Length: 87
Ligand SMILES: [Zn+2]
Image (tube, rainbow, N blue to C red; front, side, top):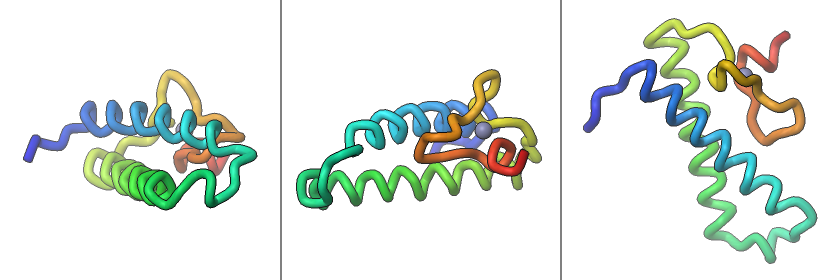
């Protein structure tokens, strides 16, 4: 297993947020059936991992800013980090 660093977690979180944003946008207006079980499960899995990695970067490395720094989490996207959710 690769060693977990603050930089690797932040990189995964940026990549994950981009994937979740894109997939979320694609799913808008589609029915559950049209999206399909495999895609729904994949979305849930990536979302789970995203939340776990945010917790890791905050608890292990005491990271405090937005995980997408220097950008900020979108207010209308599928995920918003704790730093952006409670301002
Ligand atoms: Zn944020």
